[in-house]
Image 1 (cartoon, rainbow, N blue to C red):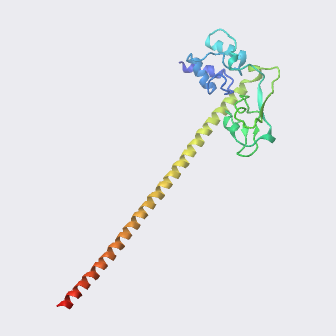
Image 2 (cartoon, rainbow, N blue to C red):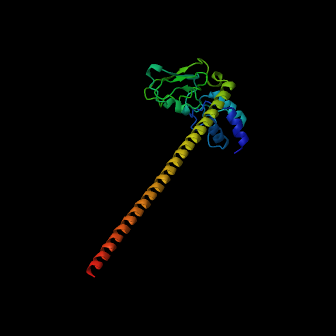
Image 3 (tube, rainbow, N blue to C red):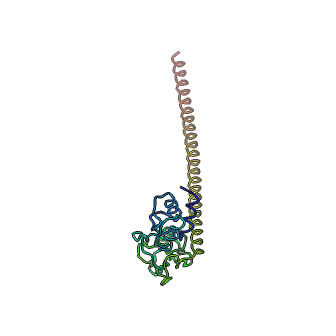
Length: 227
């Protein structure tokens, strides 16, 4: 695979990160095309113009969009019917570009200018309160999506991935610190228990020695009386 070719291909993708192509990200799809593992007509958001752009950089003929991956359509934006939202956060976890604001058990809302229309938030919603609303009537594919929007979506996707990595690292650090604290407490408890056992053993030894001295004194007294 040519890394340079993969970079060129990725720059021609709309960066919606919708996974409709069958790959987890636009980057992975670009790498698969460069490797010859995927065809260059599997991106519905890019539409037929997207296929033509990719055909040019690949020096291949323009072929029809593979609609088994989805139809070319006007670009939609997600909309949450807020009165039905239960604050489950599943849509927030699914959004690839952090276009949804909300917190557990609180109403969520979409940031329209960040939404790429990927549809990924729809399926996880347990109360079916997310709708995809077309915002570019009569315009589909690259006619409904600019280079600037694609770059912004790519930056948002990268920012989200960095945030998730940072949060995972912070969580791992918290768990490690918690485990270390528990281990230290256990070691202290074990040391304390061992010391308590030693103290009890010393007390038992002192008592046993006292009993033995008393027994010997009694025996001496009895012998003295007999003599």
